[in-house]
Image 1 (cartoon, rainbow, N blue to C red):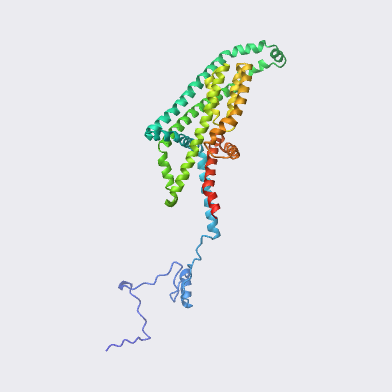
Image 2: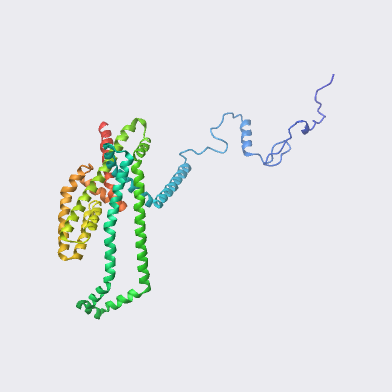
Length: 409
């Protein structure tokens, strides 16, 4: 029988790596000591070893590297806030860069919503929506064509006439006794001729002319862009409405659709109302200018109609332009124009506009004035035009949603 009792004087054999035994390898912290422990123990393994030796078996709610950062940790709050500020600033810069394009889109959508009632009337008569959109768009194109035909030729004619008459005007100034005395004393004509011959002045005139040309081309391009966008919006307005209505919950979708359609009707009625008021002012101005014999009656009447679209101050601007042209024609014509537009302004403010706009939007006069002032300060003429229907939409939401909820509490 073989004795398997271990003998103390026999050294144990070294483990054979080749027979599948595991070789003791030092940890990355350093070499092994004589008892097999690492010279530089790993802090994680050393912590676990000490916990086992101490008899601690429960697990900590966090790892050995420390407690994880929660949502309300100061660092998390600060990092999230800083990231939000950066994203908000980038969005603001993007909106500033695309401000011009966004303004064109807003104007086109506003016009499409304003012309939609005319399309709906044609659809109710029996015309398909596509043909109705085509008819309304053709009417808009005819309006802009008539405006260009009435305004551009007189401007070109007057500029050419003024260029031809400049030598005669200079001769009249030289023959004028008062002007001659001032010229002899202060050398006005000589200084003016020297100023005209300066290279800086000629460069400034060339730059001014170039800027006018660029402005005219930009206006034409913007008008063409707005018309094309308006056509697309007008043709697909029902689909656009349904797309945005689907973002609301199904249980409230019908209510939201009713309020949305009512807001769009308010905008359409407002656009129709201001166009009606502007048309009446243009026709009245045309009849008066034809009677008094002021030249370019059609062009001046179109200017009055277009400026009449501007809330509160539009009619005054148009009247001032026509009165100036009247005084250039003759003093009696200028006085007659001033008297006519002052009287017509009163009639429009107290008789025409209240009756038409009362059927268009249900907004208090004070709210209308405040909205127009704020919109004009923020976005100029476009802001003044958009402010009143926006105020009407907000008033509708307050009246139909906010106040009933407050009354139900």
